[in-house]
Length: 330
Image (cartoon, rainbow, N blue to C red; front, side):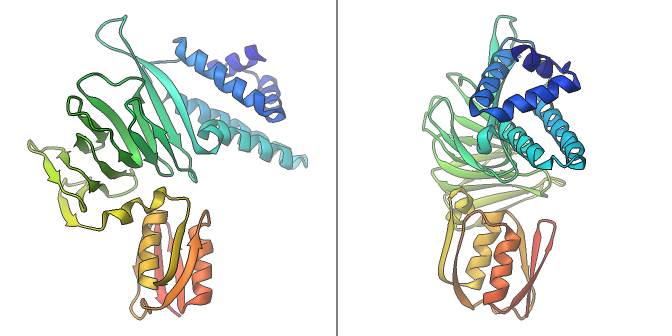
């Protein structure tokens, strides 16, 4: 089976070998762990294309695509149940048993003997979780987020790159400032708690400070902007304009919790919290009774499941348009 796994990682596995690999993976949890170990050793060996930082993501996307193709074929032959299991195995591999997938890549510095091993943590569509960085810093990652960081930080600086949303509890080290890089924004930190939102499908990039102090560096600006606790800076991706606002920073990390509890809260408060919990925009039409009070607990329910409940116990209607929820009076 090791030979088949290596063939798959190299992209040379036949259809029969891929089918054998799928059967082997879903047969035993120990097999999935063995696959992860072999994959890790293969990546570290240098056989992976180190010049392409997207390789791991594409490799497992190919695996998932293969599973989906086989699922369609087996559905036609009335074996769809077993391929659903195989598809779930593929998702587990991509998201590291439901939470995240951490891959390692080697990048070469100025000397051929100097190598920097980079870790890549990927959160799935409905996953979120925390990772401890080499210096002890804790990074929470929201759904559809990617964090890239080195196996070991250098003595004078700590750099990570974020796509999506992350909340950081940074270990203070004045000799080695902590930097979070996004497309169009770099956050410079000494030791603090803050949230960064950098989804490519959103118009803005945001940083919200809970405690401590950070300096935000924007593209085209020579001087950074210092944030104070309970301040948020939002930068437009297109024109580079930014807005600095006073906020309740705790609202912006609601998403890191296991559940959202609202007890005898106004509808306006519940909708505001749902906005941050689901990372969706919410628009209320004129006439909605925002002072209506109710109680509910959100765990892993979808936005539509919660909205259906709200529509039953409060006088509202709703529509969902992409990442936007529109609330109107009933």
